[in-house]
Image 1 (cartoon, rainbow, N blue to C red):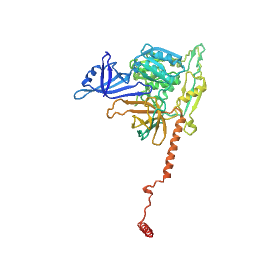
Image 2: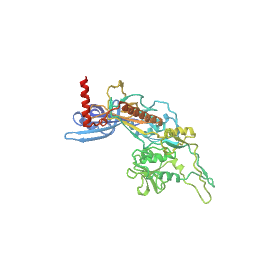
Image 3: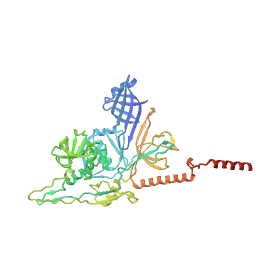
Length: 528
């Protein structure tokens, strides 16, 4: 049993005797606390303290109650509790202001924390980020934090109400695990489904203005947008939380199409629903259509015109196209940047319109070095930037964008977390990197993506580590594969050198041959 301090929203304080206490920490996420307690004895008073804003303190960090699941037995109730780090209180903060253009990290964090008790600390040096014509803000605090992490490619962690921002959290060379020494059965899974080896990129789009005879200005028509959005129908499956052509959910699909046209967008629906102005029917091409009350929507689609929508529906239907009237949305959102790109062509009897082809300040291809070694060329979806204007910068962005490696995840059925193993004191913390050696004798660098640590010694409760190995350079993966092949070749040669005799290799002797052999051995014994 562990004593966990508890405080309810009225200010009452007590200590709950808990068991199966665990804390799960994941990179760029809010830590969670889980435990159980029996509502008996001194824990009886705890039942009355379970409610909104109930706070638990573990290892100096505060967690707010998320779910409570009491299950009655013969004489008392058993509570299963989950709580989320108070950093998630940012979700209860809504910042209506926005920032656009070139902004410093500090300015965006000031926006996120203004009017709150949250503070921040920037642990590295960051250059300004150019949002172009897009904005950051007009959303919940945690959505702004996610947008910051995406824009600056940074990582964050919380010390209660202070958020720390760093380029990379964790320490290097912090642990060593060797199969069957201080861990058993190291296994790994390599996912090649989202691996591409080539990508084409577009820099900032040139102004696409065509002048009519009457002096009005017309932008590119909508057919390209409609055809692009329709091109995924029946081809891309629905995957909860997905955001790529290997699988996406409703908000992932909308974000993918918007980003393709240079309008920054990201999941979830509760972020997307505030990226524009509320509109009613008739809807226009590019409008985002939402189901649910604003602030708690549960589905989103794209309007192709006033009568038709396209969406990632569900696991059974995937990406589909259907009439808006078949399932009318609760409201629509019109994003000003997308609307400007898709303005209607203006024509009249006295004027003509000339549509200019879309041009860009620069274009480039990036081909993975694996292609030169024989791996087939697989093209990823084109990349677009609203700010890049030179080819070299675009090529560097394409290299960072291309997913030319498998996603590798290592798992272990049991790990020795205690003491020093191999004369090395393992430091287990999210973000730390270290080494594992598998049964092939291959040394692999891995990083701790998630760590669930049990704080008590409840029988059957085992702390677990998830090692993520996102290899961001194709040459690293190629060298690792070659190292594995060399190791296997060495093992094969060693087996051949040992010339192990199997039972199948022993010749079968006839009865006559056995008799002759016995006679030969007997005669030799007599000579001695």
